[in-house]
Length: 224
Image (cartoon, rainbow, N blue to C red; front, side):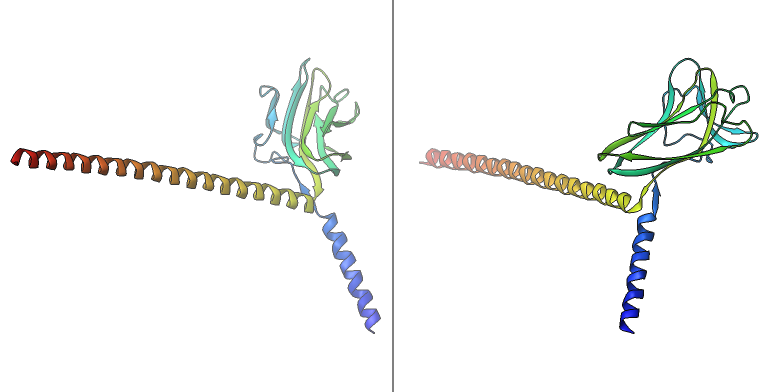
């Protein structure tokens, strides 16, 4: 009986651990563009990267490329590990035959193929990218082909939730340490200021005392 209970408990623990490990955090801010803006994104060309509402595809980020490289990006501090990059993409009618998208995370790129994108229906893409070392990593979304317009939405970079939580704890801890140091600095500055003021007061009182003593001595001499 006890053996069966122990086995069941262990199975529950294993399942719970697996469920936690499979929890994913999406690092991308405003990847749906449902708000109708590009908040959270750094743009290489704000004139040709816009948030629009397409007749068929809804709210999207539109990236129109002439003959120069063009991209939108975000960055985060990521731990080493494997991340899922996911997005939906389309293109305008004139571009669907040749338009391609390049997505890069931490220097590793993924490319869509020419002729895959549609002007009325989104195609969903997903790939896994492994980051070998921790640090600040950039997600780039490029329009990869000259003289085309591509549409993108529902951009996600998914990593283990426990890694995100640990990173947030580190950030919070760093902020607390910085605040403590700042407070210590203010305390030292205040202590120094008090000492300076005390010295000034002591000096002033000494000056008053010496002046009074000198005056009193002078009066006594005159009386004599």
